[in-house]
Image 1 (cartoon, rainbow, N blue to C red):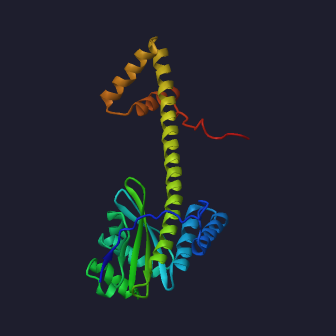
Image 2: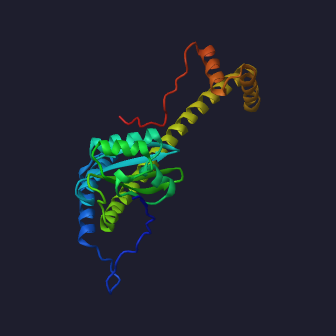
Image 3: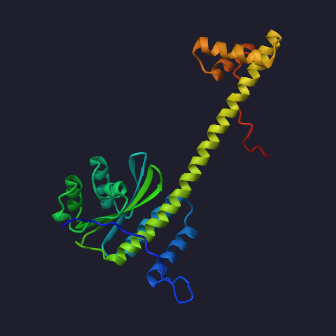
Length: 265
C-alpha cells in the first residue's frame, strides 16, 4: 500500500466568544517549543531540540529528521537518531524518496508500509535495513527555491493517525519559521559583507584617482577615464589596477582596513 496525501490547513477551533481553543496536545507542544526557545543558545541547537521533541510527541517508536533543500541541493539539518539520518543520506544520493517527493509536490507524502512500497527502491532497502516499517514527510516552503521537510520514521507499520500528523505539522511550522528567520539573518550578513567589500574597493579606486589627478593635473572625471582605460587594456578589474598604482607610488600595499567595523576601545 502506498499513499500520498494532500493536507489542507485547518482553521483553529473557537468557542462561542470567538476565542481560539487550544487542545491539550497542542498546548503541550507549544509549551515544549517555548522551553526550547528559552533554553537553546543558537538555531542549530534549537532545531535539533525540535526534532527530538517531535519524535516524542508525534507517536511511539518515531524517529524524526529534518531536511533543507535550497537551490536543488538537499542537506540534513537535524535528526533524532542516526539510523533515520542514514536513510535520509541514501535518499539524497539516490535523489528519490518520500522527503524529496514531498518537497516537490508541496504536500504530505506517506509510506504506511515500507515492506509493500514500490517507489524509491534504494531508500526502501535502507529503511528496511534499519528496521523501519513506515514513514512520512511533511514539507514547508520557506521561500522560492528553499523548503524543508520534517521526516517521520517508525518501526511500526501504519504508525500515525490524523492527530499525529497534525502534531507533526505544528512542529514543521515552527521549524519553517525558525529557519526562515535564520536564512534572512544569513542573507543580511552576506549582503553586509558584500557592501563592505564594495566600499573598500571604492576607497582604493578613489585614492588611485587622486594620485592620477596629482600626476596629470586633471579633473576627477579625466583621472577615472585614465584608470578605466588601463583596466581595459590590462584586462584587470579597476580595483586591481588601483592597487597596483598605489603600490607603485607608495612602495607598499595599500591598507584595506574595514573603516566600518566597530573600533570602540
